[in-house]
Image (cartoon, rainbow over all chains, first blue to last red; front, side, top):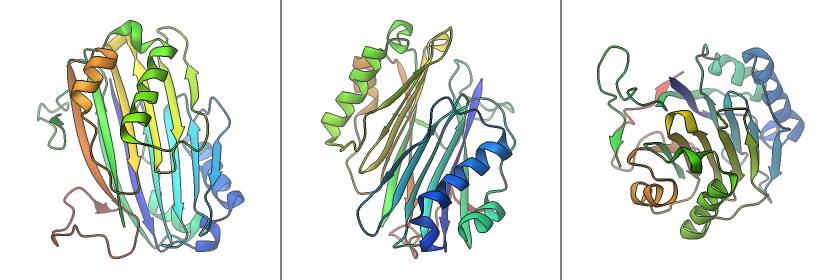
Length: 132
Length: 132
């Protein structure tokens, strides 16, 4: 049993959309629809004082989706954690379309939550995890 | 401007505490107090059907804290994302004390949300980020 988390930084975004609650709700709604995710509670949103960054958090049956925007930098940070297998979303073109991102950096983390999953299926140790 | 995210998998935990809302609220409250975090909304909690895993999400001024438990595996997955510098929490001994974890795996991710931060301070490219 391994989960996957996509950790995304998107740059070059439209600052107006990054400070727009409807635009970010549309981003989250689009991801939910296109990835067939299952929210188990309404999304939680918070707008920070000027420059008006917004945080959104969505509790999913699959785990969670979070987004933080930085209008002053034209950037956002997004996490999607799914504890069951799932195809990746085309983050770069979709974030370009939805918030105007021009540079999307993506990391995919394997998250082992069952004993014996410390190694990948091919038997190699995970290079990115060390005992704390 | 770089944020840091700690991505944690803890194994060997006490299944009773992993299915206990008060125990997990105590974990979150302890992290908030010991790391001097600033919640901007009440934590959102959800208990899944048997085996009774619990998800908690806390929206922070610093970014977010999430925890997902898997009592059937004796494990939990935790994320703490802080968009401002912060000392690391001693995850292994604290998770041992709070939920009985015997094996704590920790990854610390640098999250660049300002233009020009694609390289670490020492000038080396991030080995763990690739264009999407």
